[in-house]
Length: 116
Length: 115
Image (cartoon, rainbow over all chains, first blue to last red):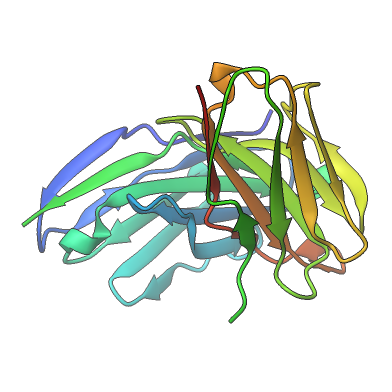
């Protein structure tokens, strides 16, 4: 069965600290997509990254980086030198190609609080 | 760039009333998804449409129905509202390209409060 686990319910860090948000997924598909979305207090869901199952190359975008490891079914997200504006709920999501509709299965989210 | 537009942004209804939420996808996007996010919860998939046909159905109550129109906008109709229907309702759109979809882009959501 498809499932996304974000074991960290809430994380608090002090500004400028690095923080890693964990995501572990379960799927029987060989073709799937992984995503991270940010949900700030205003409520909208902001797309951060999409990864397909054939591309295990890690990615860096500014202060954000993602580590995709199929061997451990993990897709972790690291924020370097965190800022107060990074405070939000972060969702990891999975989409399976064979579902035909690419609907997203979300994890329960990790609330990140960055303190000044 | 154009984004997914949802209306209204906020809606207050009484129990047993009916509500209609609207979603206008990004131009040229052919797939629409509806999600429900309860307080402190993750978004839960309700239903999706591809090229105006229902493509998948999730945990959508029978009291809810939805459709996608010829201009690709979608409406979620909710009847006999219950207090538990209070939630943030997201619409997302994507574009089918061959064997895969682009990532889904979400609207800002409609916050429904049932009193």
